Amino acid sequence: MYRFLLTPRWLGAAALAVVAAVIMVMLGNWQLRRYEERSAINDRIDAADSVQAVPLTSVLTTPTAAGTAGASPGKGLAWTKVTVGGRYDVTHEIQARGRTVDGDVGFEIITPLVLPDGTAVLVDRGWVPAPPGGAGAAPAVPAAPSGDVTVVGQVHLSESRPTAIEHRNGRLDTRRVSVTRLAGEMRYPVYGAYVLLTEQTPANDPAFTRIPIDHEDAWQNGGYAVQWWLFAGMALIAFGWQARKEAQIRSGSGSGSRSGSGSGSAGAPAKPRVKLRDRVAEADRRREAARMESLRAPVDRVEEADRKREADRRQEAARQAAGGDPT
Image 1 (cartoon, helix red, strand yellow):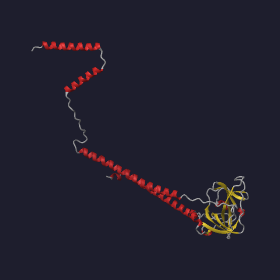
Image 2 (spheres, helix red, strand yellow):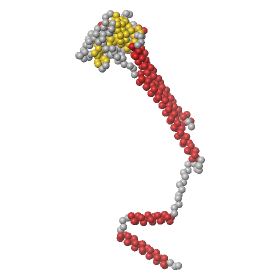
Image 3 (cartoon, one colour):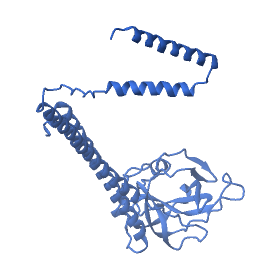
Image 4 (cartoon, helix red, strand yellow):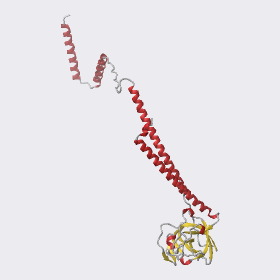
C-alpha cells in the first residue's frame, strides 16, 4: 500500500521533511539557550539586593596596559553584584548625555575609580537632570568624595555602537559608554566593564538618581523555542498526512479497476435500454397536441372557413371513392 514511498519523488520529500524538522529543532534549542541566559541575567538583577557582593577582581580580568581596556566579562557575568575600593579620579570624569530616566532627559556621570594596584574601573555614580538651558548646557554634578571610597554595584557591559568623545564642561563627553574607547583617554589600565553604583561608603550624594536596570524579555525566547518545535512536528505530520492521502487515492483507483475487470467485457460501456413505444398512442398524443395548439392560437374566421371547406371536400372525395369501388 505504501510502496510508492520508495520512489525517488517521495524519498526526496521525506528527506526534505526530516531536514526541515531537524533545522527547526536546532533553532528551538538555540532559543531555549537564549531563554536560559536571559533568565539567569534576570535572576542576577533580582538577587542584587539580597546576595553578598563579590570582589570585582574575582569577576573581571585585570587589565595590564595603560590606556587600554581589559577583556569583557561576557553576558554570563553581566549584572553580577561586586564591591571594589579605591580613589576617584575626577580629572577624567565622563558625562554621558542624552540619557533618560522615567522619561526625563539628563546625564549619567561616570568617574574612574583607581584601585591600589594602579588599575581603574569606571563607576556610574548616577543620573542628574539636564539644566534649564537644555542638554547642551553644563549639568550640576555633585563632587566625588575625596580619599578612599568603597563602592558596591553591578557589572554593566560596555555599550555597543560607540560614539565620538569630546571635551566639554571640563569632562569627557559622549553619548554611549564604550569602555574600550574611553580607556584610550585614561593614563592607566581600565577594566573591560563598568559598574552601576548602588551603595557607596561614604554615602553617594542624594542629588544622584540611581540608574534603573531593565529586565531581559526571556519569555519571548521561550515562546520562540516552543514555536520552532511545533513547526518541526508540523513538517513531519504534513508529510505523513500527504503520504496517507496518496495511499488512499492509489488504493481506491486499484479496487475500482479490479471490480470493473470481473464483469463482462473490460471497459465496455453498458448499452442503454430502448423503451418500445405504442405507435397508436404516440399518434393520439400528437393529434391532441396539435388540437391544443390550435385552440391557443388566435382564430382567423376566413382561414377557419377555408379549413372547413377543405375538410368537407376531402371527406366528399373519400365517400365518392368508396362508393365507386366494387363490392
